[in-house]
Image 1: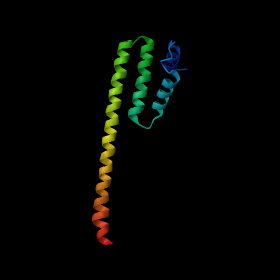
Image 2: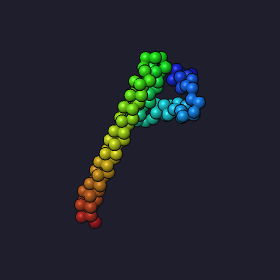
Image 3: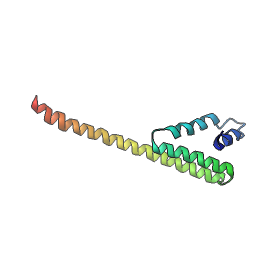
Image 4: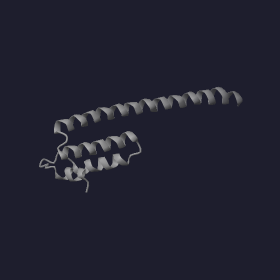
Length: 107
C-alpha cells in the first residue's frame, strides 16, 4: 500500500466523520481523470497528505493548502462554464452566418 493509503487508514475516526474509502477513491479517480487540472489537484492532495503523515506539514498548513485547492477548484469550474458559454456562442454565431445567412439564400 502507498504511504497515503496507510496514513488515511490509520486515522482514528471514532465519530465516523471521515469517509476513508471515499477519500482514497477520490484521489484515485482524480489521478485518472482526463483533466490535467484534476490530475494535478489529486496528486497535490496525495502529496500533502504524505507530507502531513511525515510531519513535514502541520495540520494547519495542510488545512490552508486544501482550502486554497477548494478555491482553485471553484475558479476552474467557473472558467469552464465561461469557456462552454463562449463555445456555445461561437456555434450559434456560426449557425447564423453559415446556415441562416448563406444557406438560406441558396435554397
